[in-house]
Length: 507
Image 1 (tube, rainbow, N blue to C red):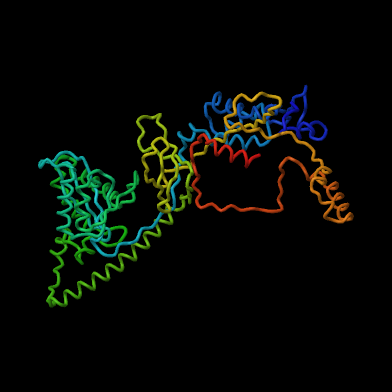
Image 2: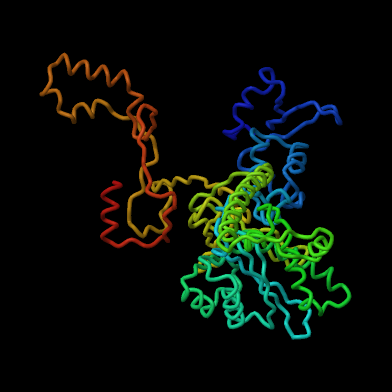
């Protein structure tokens, strides 16, 4: 009815001024044309009941349908100003709807290019494949290594993935390729154990662990798929023969051109490609020319060949990077979270079909890079975890509507007042300017003409003086914060000394 401030203007203009709105028995309706029914009659809902109608059409009878269906359900019979925007905000801030999510909720950030490694065997990417079918030597795992510059692969069979076995495999790898500067690996317990960390630290090798559920940051993960496919083809008849046949797979991968560098790994490591069966067969018909060059000439020629291969490989790798980034970034969206923003985390483990796709919420605590954030889970505040931005999406919390309650102590009895403070007077009273003028004692300090002008100015602008605070846009005051992180503290009872200070400041 005509007691709602948000729709008061519609009541006043209803009828002749605005034929779209009509008042029937003190109730405001909106009349709009409809293609199906001809005319649609919508009831205008007052502000205090709108959230209940949104809850009815979306949560209860709407069974958490989307924005479009919720709007259609509401607009069949109801209307209020900004109904479209309020419905969209209400549906977007629903906790259950946000956790279930949609297919398009997972946004990918622009691809971040990594530096191209120019020196071979300075960066060895490590990982483990398994468990595989137990071989004749009772091995079930493959410890795989790949050079970050030449893409040269290697693999060592293992019976288990304990820290002692990993250290032995690393030592065997170092005996073949030398000591690297950096070893990227995942967060497996065999790589994060104290035994493995101490071993690598002893040789001054830096360990770089992948972030949680972000295996694609390690290039060796793509090597997994290739090796598994080759072993499946070779060991199709007997899966336990994988240990006998995996050296053949390594030879094939070392002698074919890599897509990134444009050269085979063996050419970048040895300066020439390894001999393969087809190469030997070619030599049967085309006799190779005998090389009678001196050792020094061969060494200089080999060094020149290495330098040429290196330059061409880096040029090809750089062009390949830019091409991949161009295609990848076509679907990418640049996003950023500020300190204190609440986020939902992509659920990587779903025990059943009805499990939610997003868990949380968590609070963004720190920014490590453009794509990596430290997030504090609200359900486990003791644990901070690093997440890639592709695994995060913003969590929208529905704003709580609080009504201002003003209590007059003269009409209602105060039940409890721990601070023993008087309530501010909420009644507007007109200022008595004559009392202010007499109390100022200005009459004895200024001339009668100036005093008369002052009285005229005060009477002319009487509406400016009031005991109610107002607002102005003539001046501005900026407050610069040190950090965007909000300061949170639990409410606590004040001491008697602080009560006196508060009473003096407020009253």
